[in-house]
Image 1 (cartoon, rainbow, N blue to C red):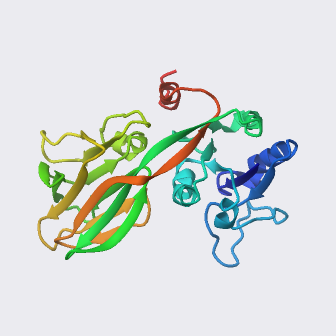
Image 2: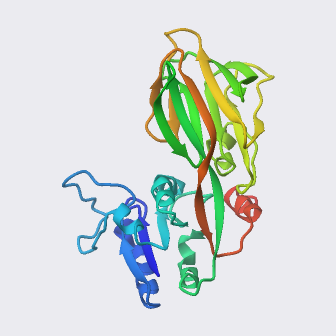
Length: 289
């Protein structure tokens, strides 16, 4: 068995958790590779990164991996999800952040990773979204989302006029700060903060949540996963809109652009070790217990 450990050096200080897991797994005969979840700028070495740790490029490690273990918050998992999916490698998250809905383990539960070499785990599939921006009939932006795609206004305090369609049928028109289109996994992220519903993460559906809509009738709604969601913005050239996928770098939309979002054939696979239900995790993370 080959396991790739991918610690965020700004979350896992000194890579202490990752190095502890490396020792644990190697005692069971597991081959372990250490890969950062992102590339460092040339010549830049964070103070938190021990010089004696041997690092492998993430894609090189994933090409031979059976499991990827991410140490960080949900952002670290989101960052790794596209690469892991490309190599069909399941992800196990260790929460080193504040909330971490996608993480299977907390920092204090590292001993449970001894179950991996024994095969005592299951794999849970999560749907993803294909996202693209279309301009003049041509695709000018394309990305893959595990959490969400967000169309939002610029920094200037002007609301957007938005129209949301499902399979080319108008669903909702409203003015507001934007709209979030999320997977069930992403329903506990930005969408929840904007008042959207919480959806079981293994469900097959698409959630559309308005952001600060200037209309009482503009509510969040849940669509069948087979729908293609289209978003158009209006209001003239003085109103700038941006598209961001999984919290990544924003792409500036132009008047007349159309954003299309549909269920992807690709999936993120998460490793499950503890047997905790989604609702146990939810109640714990939201402080209900």
